[in-house]
Length: 182
Image (cartoon, rainbow, N blue to C red; front, side, top):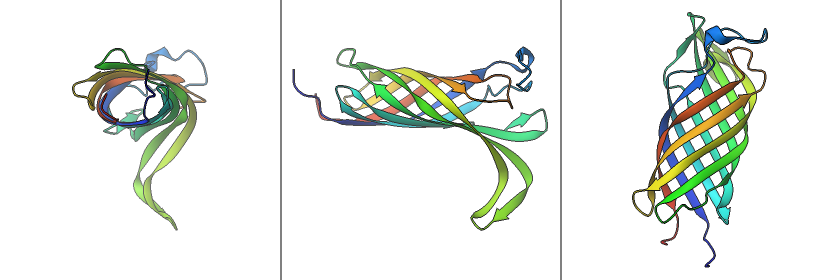
């Protein structure tokens, strides 16, 4: 068996997020507001170093603002950094399994701008540490271009603004593998 060359993969996709609904608040530490729903554009990339093992990163954000308790515009953004394993499943497919850590950043928008020496913004952010687990199935339509159905689970620490401390993102991405011909 020949040694595998290093590989870089980049992808863009669209997904949605599901989470506990606002009516399913079970603990007193959570607000009756869901983080779920909406379209989430996402970018991802990975670098496979050796034996289909490597590192990866993802960023996904809600495309449009949602309303927090019916009046406060907000937008969640998920960032994660992972270890990744991409075992081949034949010539035109590969599994994708990852796990790591990240941040949920929820931007709450204001009607006025606040300016400091670093610039002006019209939002404040609430940031939370998270654990991330994800997977997908790369289906190669050419030797370099793939379509990937995928799912991601976020375990969000101290996510008291929303109904639950976990969220699931699922969708599909189109990507390109920078790899040697096989």
